[in-house]
Amino acid sequence: MKRRDLLKSGLGATALASATIGASTASAQDAGQDRVNWRMTSSYPKSLDAVYSAGETFIKVLSTITKGRIQIQHLAAGEIVGGLQALDAVQNGTVECCDTAPYYYVGKDPTFAFAAAVPFGLTTRQQNAWFFEGGGLDLLNEELFAKYNVFGLPIGNTTAQMAGWFRKEIKTVDDLKGLKMRIGGLAGEVLAKLGVVPQQIAAGDIYPALERGTIDAAEWVGPYDDEKLGFNKVAPYYYYPGWWEGSSAIFLLINKAKWDALSAEDKALMTAAAHQANTITIAKYDQLNPGAIRRLVAAGVQLKAFPAPVMDACLKAAGEVYASISAQNPLFKRVHDHMMAYRNEQYLWQQVNEFTYETFMIRSRRG
Image (cartoon, rainbow, N blue to C red; front, side, top):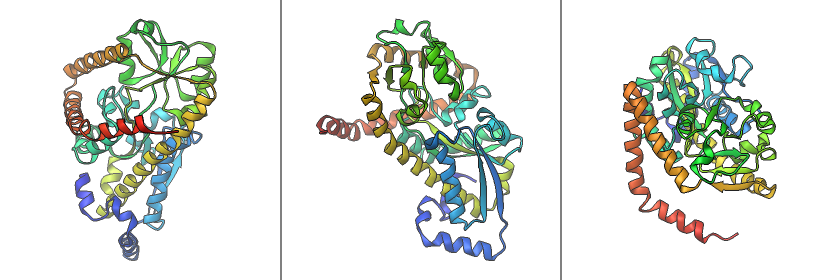
């Protein structure tokens, strides 16, 4: 069932605020509709409450609008499988669904990155537009996720991420050579072209690696999440922008057989709950990050923007990585071309009005 078909059923995200949801659910229960009890494994620990809350919000909303008929147990990373094994657990039926960042699975197919974040990709609003109105979500579900026995719905976004924590300043492209950095996926491939040595390190191991000097830099998410992990105590320079994650989607991946077995109404209800979780998670990050960045700066963190020549070199390297993968992977090329054409079209409008307005307001703000 495509997203547009689900929304046309009348139980889209806007229906969450209407009495028709309650009436429809009550009618379904009166008709003896089956209860649903699933398990959801997460790629995130409970301690990272902002990103973990995407799954929590989805579950809570779904339970509310079905009056408890659909229940999902949320299992943090490591409770049943490791965070990076979430997709495998859903594929093989160990659990019915997971909340995760699809770019964790670029080892299976680099096309997974487009479902989360890619270097010099989309902003959060652009990504939502591409998913829900630009055909991106249908493309991913039909041509990528289906191959791995899952169906996907976005349930959150961390918004634009920071470029991470560095033990030394980055003044030129040459300063990247030999730099050992905790970063993975396509961003790691891009930076490797400029001499960075990418390191794959789990969240809990980043702090000691930075403290001991085993690595020279590390990226995670943004001010709120990074503050919780205490990176400012061992690396003084906090760089931006995180060009590899101009937005970063959190996905609900559902075992395809389980999804296909649901009624049309339950699919619509899950889609509505996913839309609500997506909206709330974005709002949560927009709420939490400003205070966190103020606290970090007050604690002595030095905010640094990448110099323009560094950004230009990274953009050029990203193009080379995309061309190389596209030459070997037709699906990657198809999704890449689709997304980037959409991005360029979006900027044609945004540079006229929104960018001009936001730039003026940023210059004019007081306090």
